Every structure is written in structure tokens, then in C-alpha cells.
Image: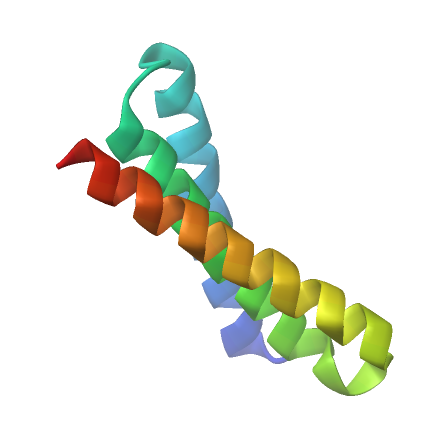
Length: 82
């Protein structure tokens, strides 16, 4: 994994942990839930891209499904909030 990928992963992970803590404080806030899912999708995207060449078709398919579902759920929560 390149240094840039590690730095991006750590930044996204820090934001993800921050949002998890914020979610515990505001249990029913759809904006926090939506942002959490979008950041989770971004984190999965970084993980998938960094491991893409070493994975099988099944693993790649699972990555794609998890990424798409994370972004869809996050966007739905953010739209529901408005």
C-alpha cells in the first residue's frame, strides 16, 4: 500500500470514529447516520482499491456490493433528513 493510501485511510478512519462517537450522543440524528454511511462507503472504497489486484472475482463483487449499499443508505438518510 502506498503512503498516500495509508494517509487517506487514516483520515477517513478518524472521521468514521468521530461520527461513531457523535452517533452515540445523538442516537436519532439522520444527518449523522447518513454521513456515517457515506464515510463508511469511502473507507470501503479505499480498502477495495488498495487490494483490487490481489482479490478474486467473488471478493471484488462483495466489495462493490458493500460500497454501493453504504453509499445508497447514506444518501437515503441524508435525503430523509431534509
